[in-house]
Length: 437
Image (cartoon, rainbow, N blue to C red; front, top):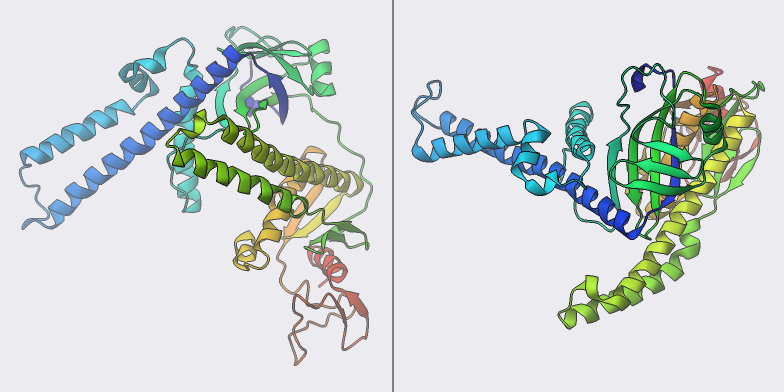
């Protein structure tokens, strides 16, 4: 039986499921437990760091910095406390032994193990990137926790979607550890085929999530030596794309895709709903009541949450459809590297840049290109908007004025070719990747 990392193909699926009230309570318990464990590691390690830092500073400020003086009673107490905390978070078992509520039957031990693993992964990412130390997870109306699918029979030669502790009972029902059997919706056709034909497939990480509008989703990480999708035929059609705000993108062949602006279309309606929500919040606080027990406030909160989630889903659906069409119709897709932080510094365009979802779109192109054996690359955008693709003249050099954001159309001062700025940039992006200039 192969491990996940040794299998050739990986795929992720997300399905909506419908838990009972009892199952919802168990999901909430596991979410709280996983959050508590993660926050325990964050808090305890911060205390340990402060104790070590204090001891180091005391040694440096002493008369003999290279000789360890005898510790005082207070220092001994701090050292003992630090050792207690280190022992507590050394293994998940010690933490479960210290807190009895983590040992009840409803709590999934794999959820606790995943919380510890996610904490260590956060530190690894910090050491790689240099920013983003682990922070406390706050309470939220959106719940999520991770568990794993284990295969208890080690003698199995192959793993299937129907023989793990997380498994499909049939095409419409899934069994999840501690939660039990739940009804699922939107099961993909290839999953149904793998269930019926018993195609070897391993389930890895299982993530359960409740959104702010009270919808429940389960995400499964799958792996197999048999590909999940068939590679698409090569069509021999490379393309460069320029992402912009006027049109969502412009292709090097001249095609343009309109920017849907989902947030801007719903902005006024969302603002009105939020005004009512704020007014009800002030009224509840004035009466000294808890917001959780205020039914009118909670109803309005759900209306705001549903509209926000609707905007998010509209945007994601648009990006998914567009990225799939591009990957299917082109063997090579070239885009410019995005510097989101720099774009958001322009406060006049920050909201529009956040609404358009370029970073998500590029990540979709990247993983779909790998999935369908196509090629997606990004290039340095330097001079792509300032260069004439016909003669190579670069505006802003040799005494020619530099193009500003207002200059959407321009004429080359050397060859007199009329340019649409975004189309010209898309042609330059493809040419730069192909080393034409």
